[in-house]
Amino acid sequence: MKNLKLMLPMMAFIMAIGMSFAFNNSDYLLAEEVVKIGGTTYEVNANCNGETFNCRIQLTDQSGDPIPNEVYQVYGPDATGEYTVLLKSESEEPIPVSASSLTPVE
Image (tube, rainbow, N blue to C red):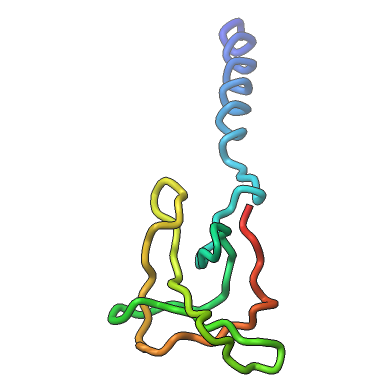
C-alpha cells in the first residue's frame, strides 16, 4: 500500500508528459502541393500523382482561359518542411488552375 501511494502519482505524471506529445497542432500542417511565384509560396490543388513528367500548373483567369506565360512547377515538402521536392505527373501538359484559387502559405 505504501508503494502504491508513491507509484500512482509518479505514473500519472509520466503519463501526462507522454500524452502532451500525442496531440498535434493543426496550425503547423504543411501544404502538400505548392507553387513559387515571385518569391511567394502558394498552396495549390493540382493532384500531382505520377512518376514520369514534372508536374506543372497553368494559371487560368476566371473564365478558364490560360494566362500567357503563367506556367509554374509544383513542389512538395521535404523532410525539413521546405518545399524543394519536384512533384511528378503522368502528363507533360500543365494542369489548369484558376489564379483566384491560390492561397499564400505562411
